[in-house]
Amino acid sequence: MSNQRSLGLIADTHGFVDPRIPAIFSGVGHILHAGDVGPESVLLELQRLAPTTAVIGNTDNLLALPHTVVIDLFGRRFLLQHIVDPLHPTPEFSQCIETARPDIVVFGHTHRPFIDWVNGKLFVNPGSAGKRRWDTQRSVAVLHLLDEGPHVELHTLPD
Image: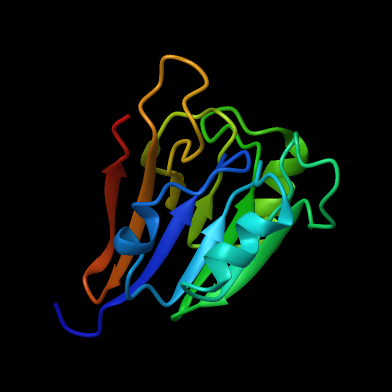
């Protein structure tokens, strides 16, 4: 695995940083938080692990975060947004994809992991890292940017 670069992908923390996350994200070069962060202290805690970029989620009323971020990291372009439906994109989101031309889209909101290629773009929802809210398994992901292509490693966070 030559030239490996990794990112921590997290969403829907809702104010809770699981104590296992520092070990899972150990060594990542950047963290992308796909919204529903909770208080700013969550971002400060993640910043201690690696540079962190975040977008606002539908429950983040008090945070001054952007709705969408396009960021180039490790030779790839990422689009980060909280609410995305990869299989049925809104016209606005389709236009955003057309304009930004990302390689990888990271999103949250559903609390369920999603890792799939859609129209030549890798879409990743790392699932929900916050305390369990419904009957969903909690999780985060590490994205390895390998020479042969991206590889997503999903980490479940059992209760």
